[in-house]
Image (cartoon, rainbow, N blue to C red; front, side, top):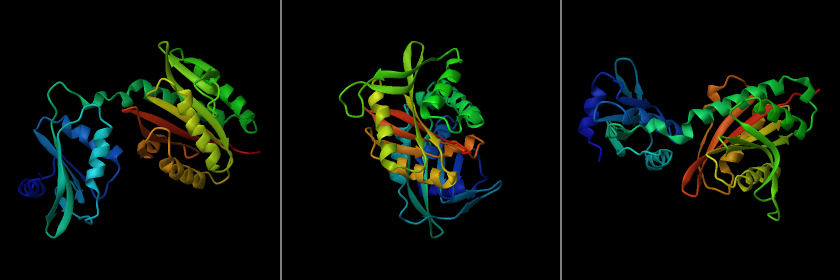
Length: 303
């Protein structure tokens, strides 16, 4: 139960690091980052306010409509954590304006929310490595009119130079699209003698939804282990890349995956500088465990 008296006291005081404010933020992937910060503070609890602007010397109450779905946001954010702090949430009305409040309590000493396995350095390192390889592929004129297999060979060979990975291409594993026999993975990456990730690549000249959907499904038929993350790598041979990317994101955020979609995150794209290579993440519930699918779209210039 949110104590409006305590909320008013906080908002009337000088802003501090134990309060995080958003004018409007519904994305669980952003809220979960806020929760992590507050759950590791030295004080007993901290607040996340939605509908409040935080300046250097004061809080400005903006207010939100009564249709704000804070419950869904909190539940999805907590679903992304392996360690879950106690949270109280609700809405309060101050000066005729409705704001939404999350009160995050400090977790037990010695417990760290930052140890979430989906945010491991090994995953981040692989994605960054693959991203840099895509930049090199994109700048090599040899691959402008190349086939998917030729581009995949380049990706595989570059990854194979990294000592910590064992790269296998066209590996027969899982089921084919028809389910009748083992299918062929574009690139299977192993690390420490175990499957690490599957990279499924395809060429799209436009948003062919049926073709893209088949490849998204194939990733999960090939990944028999249930990797923490996999990659859908798109070679986009389209002229209007920005429009293509917008449509792509809309599609994968609405797609009916073999494993239920929990959240999507386009915010990660801001961590990478290129406008002609775009990246986003969808998070899925696979047999009760969170897994990620990285979507990387690389614009391929045409002659």
